[in-house]
Length: 117
Image (cartoon, rainbow, N blue to C red; front, side):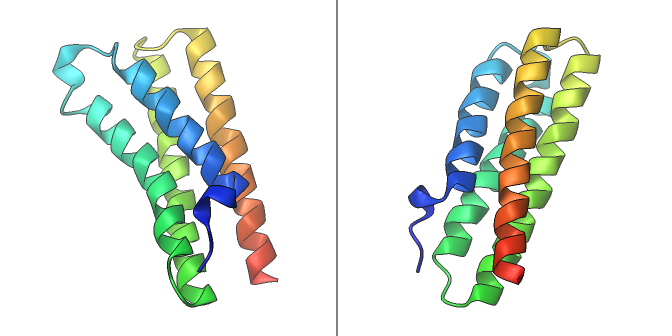
């Protein structure tokens, strides 16, 4: 078993979750069960799947959960873009979140490549 807290990919994904929760708190109330919920769930899934994969015994299982995490992080990227287009996020907030999402996804992709090689 691995300690997920030591993985930089997890640390970045966790920071993204915190940022998503902060910005979505200001989204319109009619989005509470729509975009707000979807965006938060995808962000949490990105971090949580790294945690769950780290607890698996085999490397194959670990990689499967990392792949799921990567997909969730990419999904968050779309929700950030959509939120900006809907003007729920300022340009600055959208750019900051996009950067966090991109860095987290890149770090996770590198981790996946490392374990696949």
